[in-house]
Image (cartoon, rainbow, N blue to C red; front, side):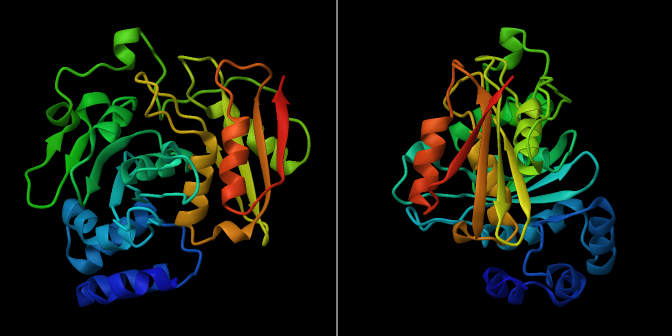
Length: 294
């Protein structure tokens, strides 16, 4: 078990500990449970779907990287498949504040990058901020997304974001979690191809500037991130943050990064290269590779 989980795990009910222990044994536990695993955990622990998500929040929050705020937020997203995905806030000391990832963004992007096709619900240990409410409005679940908070009756995103403005107001048809392929040809080595494939999946209907990033760790694990744009622009999530989110949730540290490849269009309206290099440099990695989408 990764040391970050030990304190939270010790506070869980005995039946839940017994159900989770074999799944958490790997130091690089992927911070998710498949639908089959989630069903087994519910059976062994006696918890229903919502109760299990609430019970897992301390484990999700233990994944937080909060060098600035020291305030850990956890989230658990339930996909339409029934799989559960952890999320946690992630901050980068020395980088621009805009590089921060919120817990809801973390869980949502985690599910998206794992191939989930939509969300049924998201459970969070604190009320979503306005930034996250707007980010969630870009999903294909729209304002009907169920949001669960401790001590409150389940609500929909529409309850937290009244009079919402979003992609549907701009006649955007393809939303986050919908299948998308920008059609750029794969080229180069395996990691470069992974970055291009991530760019092909990216959601960039406002700038038409798809981009993707692939990270490789020293032990050969690969994590990819796709750009996720937002109708309100500022809540957009860069591809680096999406990839770092997966890497961190899986128990790796920034020092484990061996290679980083960014793929984006030449002279794109939105350019990721400089901000990506600056953030990686803060994390101690200075060798960003770049491929032009063609």
